[in-house]
Length: 284
Length: 284
Image 1 (cartoon, helix red, strand yellow):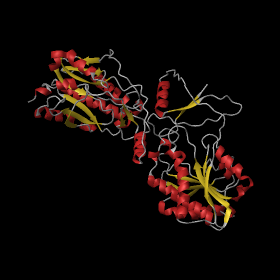
Image 2 (spheres, chains in turn blue, red):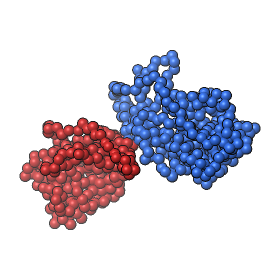
Image 3 (cartoon, helix red, strand yellow):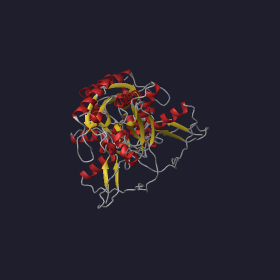
Image 4 (tube, helix red, strand yellow):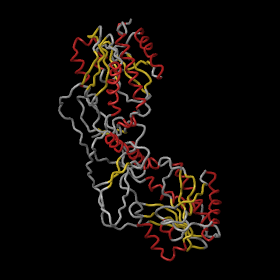
């Protein structure tokens, strides 16, 4: 009749985390809710004593019809190949509790600041560097899909896509070009991967040089599936799930120094991909 | 028109702490509320930018007329001097959010278990050892006052009072016989303090031997004021204010090993005070 999920978090002060539920078309749409670690443990203890645990669910959540929202974009037009694009960003929506500071306010602001850095330095890369704040990541990823649909055939003009959506803790590097598989897109060539590793070395000074095989991110996944080489910024991830999808995801959790390191990582990668003579996806 | 207080806690996941407000008889009774660290920081940041911060308070708190509640007691009657009493305990009420596991469920359960230990060991001390779960500590301390009033002149038969009301973290020792002062009661003699230090040494094996000068606790304060030598169990207090008076004060926060150490500390102290030939307060 319903599903209760122990909050996916290591740390709790009785704050439940929200999350999505997916239904098969044929199955029943049962209510689902996350409960705090404390309440999950309480139910488990009662149950272990043989107690018949009854839970009364009062939920206000409902699925409303789609409404309009918008992706937000800005760019520095490329000086030689303005129709070729390196896109970077995150998502402008968040779960409706908390402020969404880590998920994903920090991601979109860091992407914007990365391009602001280029502007302040009077850098106009060879190709266009575009920042996108995708909408509706949390509830269907419509913003990412709409962006790809809006591109149409021009999606092959996208040289790379970069997403920051794991919070603003200290960055360690990027996932790049995951393996083939359902929902994963084509894997990148060994040459492309080696080039990414070379680019990563630019970030050794801030200990963010690790290039690993993995996915890019939900917003850019439609681009990944269309063959655009995709990068996902990775962090140490020590505390992200303490705050993520809870009302504790507030601005004070963003460490300014770590935030600036993320900006640096995004700036260095996006600039290099936009400036280097070859398209990284063309390396065989 | 109102007072907002930044929650008295070092750690927060957007969980405000409750607390009491005291009014002078002559002054206005303005609403007062605690806000979470996150919200306090948010208001401070907005205010620092010159923003005119407006807060709308919707509060349900109200002061209801007094209602009946009860202190809960149990004891092992002394074998030689049953009318002389060592009392130990905590308070059975808690703030109405959370479970009050640390404040003060652990305190009353540890006091009871300390006496259960004596029962299991077939120990009947020279004097009576009484466990009291005082009521209404959080909101007026009526249970502690009622207990003293119930004793009447027999309060001078109380050899010592011991309270555990700082949570069930690892114990380090006891505060004993604070200095003179308003609301503090008479200080104990140097001889009594030295004896307490000797008793404390029984707890060196669990690193809980520290006897320091200080107060006993809210519930036993009426006894302290009446001249009863009073002890307050002290812990490392690393996390108590992470949970205290919030809805995160739940059973899972009680570490079973630390809890048992508190039982041991209460058992050793209360037994020794009840068994030793002299009354500790008579030592000059």
